[in-house]
Image (cartoon, rainbow over all chains, first blue to last red; front, side, top):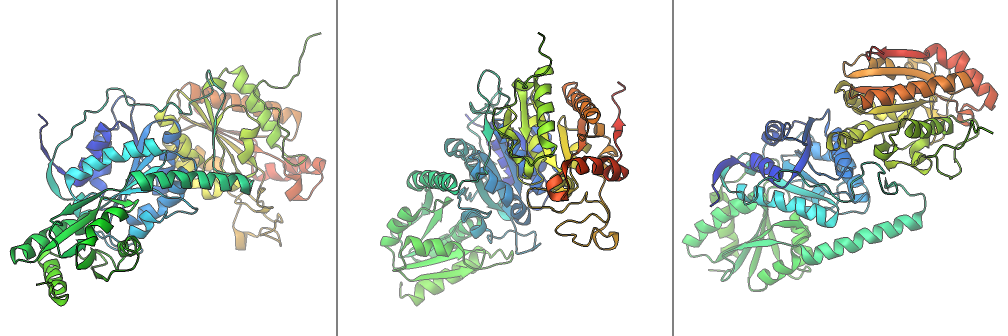
Length: 356
Length: 247
């Protein structure tokens, strides 16, 4: 029997990472994710064989992740929106060097210094590469504290499987929310070390991990090789969650905190007899396009709801090939609408499209 | 007959790409000799960020991981924290370590990271074609200080090693040069000590090496060696800057 404990989303990520065998954490304080950095300082830093370093910058932190990953251990960094912008250089290098790592973005309002309140305006940055070059990262979008834990463990597994950085895109609302959570894994007594670790050429030829190549033909092949891996991921890894979609006439599409709010709103309008369901992408890249097409087939209206000016809506449109009307409701800048506000928006769309 | 001079065991057979008179190849050779003599090759990992020496991995036969520009000390920190039994060294030019990488380097030193920095100072950005570096001397002409570096416009040459020596985590900092047999011997001794500081788990160590760049200085090789002695050492004096090993 696994005991449930009450945890913040941010600390649940930390505990899950330790249980997933994360050996090195490097971070730099930024609100609203500090509970995670503090948790790692208290619970990982003095564990035998493990390391916590409060870096001098987000840039240094992601490059420490680069070093630890080269040395073959599970490693993580976390930050919030402006800090993630600084990490993009390092994420591009991790992608180029095919190094596994987990990067957590507990996002806040932007652009610029923005606000410290939860927002979802980093969707493009997370799903389009963000740093320079032709690369992708797997992006997981949890919507509960339990999922913060589960998807953190999943993120480490995916990073190792596909040898690439994996992003967790949470937000300040979920990160600082407390909920019961249970963990089905114990932390390994001895953290695992990847077989390809770079630790000196003892008993084997020396190895070089690098991303620079002066020959464009070689670099093209590297890019196509990454592309082929991304195609496998697009086939195998899309994940989505649905809520009351079986009889739905209006489908709300939302991720993360928005999905959480939409769920409350849907319960409210369902009580009034409106047949509304929720489609929630769990992986933002790869976007669960096939599952969305299947869920959208039976509905008469689609409403995308995001805490931004409309970013995921582009993936919804791409998934549905532009042959459906798609409405949007967004609150950018760190405004977190109440479920009742979203319920009013849903009801309006429901009636406007004649879905009584 | 006794063999007194031979190719170092861990120097690869590749031809150096460096310009005639450049100091990199000399320092590479020293590093290779020390890998053998100190018996650290089997657990050594080099970190070369971009710059002329990014291709150090083509010549020094150890594990290497290339880092982003300036981030060598951070990448080295990550390796050493994950695998404390390794011997980790960064190999950085002045354009890298004293401009974009200043923050990473000072903080790694201040944390007392058990890593060794090899800092090649040629007072110029070499790989990108001879632009002004933070270490460029006053009145020195470069492609981006075409009238000569003027303190009123470009500020002063930066003394990174002295700055690093101010951190409590730095144990051993020395400045040497590779423009004469005597200086080369001193450079080898300094690098040996810097690695030993790491092996003894004492803290951060760094050797700054003044190295001629005849191509970008637009000088003959002999003149460039002289310029190191006559001009560079006035601003960057040779010798031990900090040593708390007591040895």
